[in-house]
Length: 482
Image (cartoon, rainbow, N blue to C red; front, side, top):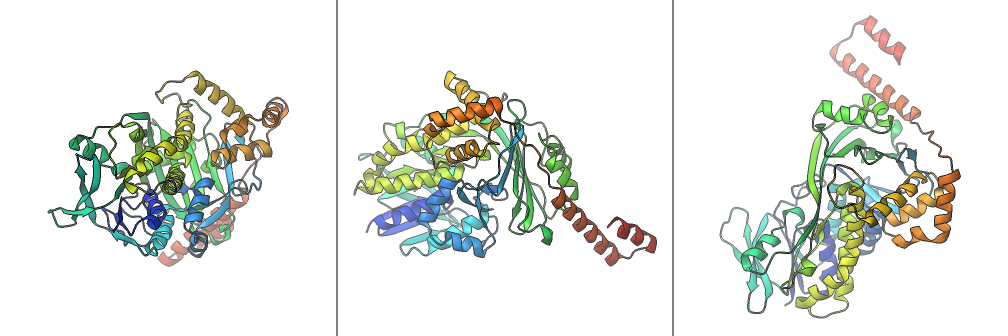
């Protein structure tokens, strides 16, 4: 009986299980944490409390692999949006032009998307999930340079048991132990590319007034490089209003009430600072940090063993502020599907896969790290290519008030159009014309939304006072304000 073992049940793990299940008799997914937590944040998803935007290419791949996702998203208050019409973005000193682009994606909490995909994985008949289970080592045949299984321990049991397999795939993300296992087993250690960003996230959720449901846009405030990297995002999320903040190498402690507010006040546009005082918090501030982007070059390791693969964030991890992580996992899974169609030998699949995947994740790596290097505190070589990239892409960002320029940029940003499309003569001519003669329209406000939030806050305060007793004169003052 043929078997595939997948280490980890995150986004990369679930997509990989779906892709490989037709090619083996049994798929065993191993998860070190408890999975039966419903739609709540679970251990093993370090960014589970924070906003996730799936890029359109990732949306397309997930929809192809898991066709029930649209239906389940709608049923559980997740949103399918048009990236141009429903996404309001301030960047490089201008508001990008909102208009329908037919570039669709899901916007939901990470736990909801995780849960929706998990339900569909559980429907695959030959997939078995072992949670509360740790992989403590690989079973390695040195003579044949082949991984033939894993050693696992169940929670509460220190004695390892062995599971054999034709192929073992590590999709365990940042918690990966493959590098250490390879070193201990004498296989070798891959070289790495790395860009340090010292990124910090903070998210908090607030009450959503009924009058604002289906009215509040996903609104992103980006900085103007190279000096500030402060980002602020306000968004509707499954009946709540969320604010996510992020910064690289920041001295502001956004995990505190004061720091959270200071960050908002220091954004490049005052929109969030106008809304923030009217919001009523319903959660604590939750944080996340990451040291940098890293690409472990397993595809260049000469002694890479048969019967093994490394995928997802365990292979390449990029700065999450650009929303590329889940889409990277989806593109890697799609690449594995293509490799599987080209060979019948599971034990040899790494040869096909690692020939095909570097160009796919290489583009994600290039775009992400080049953007990181736009900010002065980020260390790294600014080659001539990077300098030209910064100059040209800045022009695109500064002229994205033009609908044609913005749409083509978003297609490339979402990996549904090739990078070369930004260099076609018709695009370059329009870009230069808008740079020289275009006039951005920066009139954007949320007066109606702010009024609704103020009214909601006053009504709530009145209810609290009424429940706790109130003096007539104080009541008159509140009513007059309302």
